[in-house]
Length: 436
Image (cartoon, rainbow, N blue to C red; front, side):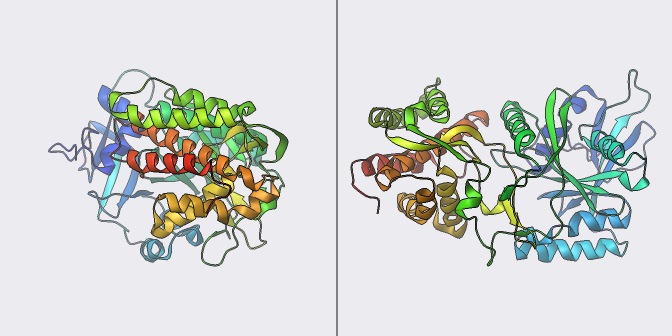
């Protein structure tokens, strides 16, 4: 960890806390306006701005929970327990009940501090709490003390990492969910999700997306905040019904039948795959562009949807007790895409989460498992191989883009060899009469 003798996290290391500093406070840390310190002793030169408990510990931090009133700290741990796997709940629920009694839930705390006596305007927070607080106060037309907000911060270290904030009010109730961009790739994700939610948030469709509370920029990067999910939602696992065909296409309706080359999504996908590439990825992108060329030459007629979600998976969906399906994380959504991609991605991701990996057999099986939803969209069976090839290209382009952004494939969930195997298998299926 990038720690000095005062236990200051500098952001220069590779630990989870260093990575969080890089994502939230690095610019202010570098100028000397702010420091992020573990278990600070009193120091007249620094004034605390934010304070959190570090869980489960500083070496393997996964979440920062607010060091505040016991209701706030406990609420940040106990809310939405039905969205998490049972093993995670055992730990979080235990810590939440401990916090509810007033006992500290962690051994260490993290303090974000501003330099005392510096010239210029006050140090501005990188967290969009004030913006949401103002929005809620405007909605309530009051300055109700319960509008005072706190944030628990999820620490993400994967290739698509960005700070995520669960906002909690003074009574420990959910008040919103925020994402904060910190680099160019996360900027694009936040911008995309904001635009989509402005169109479909708060709809009454069969599948629903959370409403957009507010969005804007902080320190030159965008953020968004969505309304909280219903408190009774359950993850789409362990007996909770997966999406129906009606739900798959309720926010992503089929709008026409057309040749695949007319799809804006396919055109943009091919354009991204033809971007300049480093020597180490030449073979991967060569295989991808060859497969894209085969698809352009075949140019089958396929159903085209208004958009696709882009990452419709069990961990981004939940049902409330009325049975309504809620879906979030629209940051990968793209317009004018071949219908059925979400159904295939769902099946493939369920198999991946079950430990089946990214094998070519799983791609073929996923197409078959999504079959009823592909039929519902009007996708002919003899075009299923084309859909599999498009999906293989999508996975390749996304993984390559994130690896390029992060300087390599170390954090990627899939390897270049696995991607090439998938694309070779998908091309082989294009000449077969049926998948399987």
